[in-house]
Image 1 (cartoon, rainbow, N blue to C red):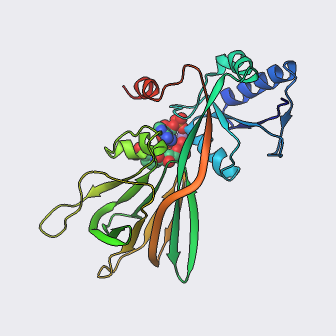
Image 2 (cartoon, protein in one colour; image 1 turned 90 degrees about the vertical axis):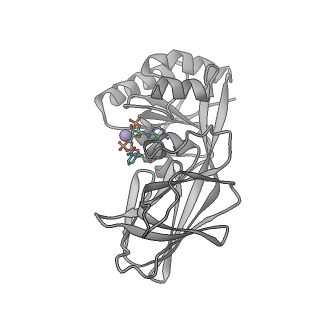
Length: 267
Ligand code: NAP
Ligand code: MN
């Protein structure tokens, strides 16, 4: 089988020197490198941290071609190898000694001002206050109202995103082999005036989440985030968050184990 790789690198000095080094090694191995996502590219190599991988996934619009990350960032949870493992990577890749880890993604549809915006995310979508006021959100699951939330907002995380912002909000770490959506409250209020769930709730992938700004509340400017991006809205009528049919495929080598990675990066 013939190969062609695409290299996507962020601009830090260590990423740039790793890229230089990788290009030399690929040339010696006779593997051509493309500068664009052509049809015959079989691997996208992303040099940087998780943020760089997230941006690459968005830049190439969620392709099915696998990504392999080289970690030169801070955490590097998505990233598979370190810069000193390039030889191992090339050898194992050519011998097809790797596996593919499919990651589910989610989609948000924001209805506002008689139009709609659609976003796809690998980590999460969050609907938040854009300043120092509380937001009131009527939240429904599969069409039925479940709670009137008050607080900073809600975050809907994929299993891949469960170790990111979701975890800082005390959400659960989810093994990506499980297909579910996690809805995590951001600073939920609980008083005689307002009642909200205080823990995350888990949804099966065939149920969608509906979010409608509380009608009686005058302030309803919302910040809607997806991965590293965010957008501010004045007149949201409804937000729907559901499983997307796109998957992001990550390349993993023989010693990869999700829970070892969690231990290595978090404990
Ligand atoms: P950033 O603010 O530079 O990075 C946030 C941190 O989250 C980085 O250490 C990043 O790793 C790490 N990260 C990203 N995705 C991860 C994942 N799936 N599992 C574990 N850690 C992950 O922003 P960024 O690099 O563009 O990443 C965007 C993400 O930041 C968002 O999707 C959101 O999850 C997260 N975020 C977290 C908080 C919080 O924890 N309070 C607040 C806002 C946003 P690297 O160092 O390798 O890049
Ligand atoms: Mn980052």
